[in-house]
Structures are given as structure tokens and as C-alpha cells.
Image 1 (tube, rainbow, N blue to C red):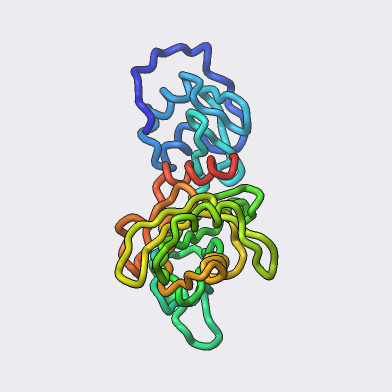
Image 2: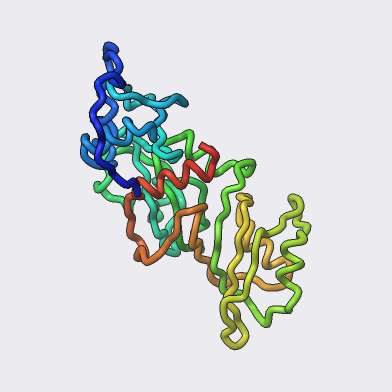
Length: 259
């Protein structure tokens, strides 16, 4: 993602070390950005900021608290933080553990993740698809709060046929019992006899909002799969599987919430 160029040496740019913390280039390298030499190059070329100021060679940081950006993109350097994508199967409840003994998210994770993580938002038991899990509470809050406008996309199988003006109606807004809702985009993906596949994108997070919305306009949902949350896509992740987000994906999530 970042191109490494030969770095000329100029000791006049080296700042005196301050007590405590770790060398910035070491912290960046440990976060997977590249070798220490490559990270020194980025710092020298003023492409790195720490807590809002341009970094310099010799800087020391605390990985647990430092806010580091490279070329304007957030770099998470706290190794305790975990960011996961999961393809939740139908029938699994969106809780880490279930008092009724139903299959929950922790059952899918097993012992593969040492840290305690939490799901970002929910999918009802009958729905499938992308869930994010993390122990970064600040990012999780921003992703779920409607004021940040993080878009979520769903592929739905619904009763057909679909009238031509349905998309315009949904984007104009539909009144539900708990207030109006409108989608950000809508398209028909396929028609299958008396059913159709439609793609709905919105930034609402109310309970069962997609199912309630489509039922209200006369097209109840028989299957629902969430395919993306902001910049993160479900892709070819198999049902029931989990993967760690890449550095670029985590940076894109922070960018989506304005950090």
C-alpha cells in the first residue's frame, strides 16, 4: 500500500529520545507495515503523523495510546486490538453466548481468538452474512451510531414481481411504526419466477429494519444476507468462518467513521 523509496541520511532530522515508549519505526514495523528501514523512510519523508503532528526520526510512542496515521490512513499499533470479519450462518444468534443453549458467535470462534471480542451490531437468527467483531470499543461505537452514516448492504430474496417504481419509493422514505426509513440505494439483482433477489443499502440500524421495510411495501423477505459493512465486504468468506481484517481494511473502517 505504501511505496518505499531510498532514504537519504540526515542526522539533523533526528530528535532527541524521550524517556519511555518504543521507537516509532519499531512500533510501525510490528504492526505489519514493513521493515524498520522502510518505516524509517516513511517517517523521514514526513508521511507519518503521531497524535496529529508530523513524526520525526527518534520519536518514541506508547502503542496503547498513540494515534498514528500514514499518508492519512490510520495505522493500528496496539497489538491487543483485534478486528475480525465473520460470515454468520442462518440459525446462529448474534450474541457471544446464549443462555438458552442456542449456537452463538463464540461457538464459531472457538479458541482461535485469545482476546475477548464483541460483535458490532446484530443480525437476527434467521439472517446470514457479514458481522464484524472487535475489542475496540471506540470504533465499534462509531460503526453502530447512525450519525456516522456507515452504509450496510443486504442481498434479499423477496416475493415478486418487483414494480418499477419500488426503488424510488424506498429512497423517498416509508413510514414504519417507529418512524420513517429510507434506503440509500436499491436495485433488482435477479428474478426467479415468483421471487426476486434485490440489493438494499442503508445506514439505519433499527431492529429487523430491512425485513420490516420490505414487508411494509408488500415484498416480505424469505432470505437475507448482509454482504458489506462500510468498506468491508463479505466476499468469498465461507459460512461459519472468520478471518482477521487486513491493515488496509482496518484503516478503511477508521476512515469511514472520520478518523
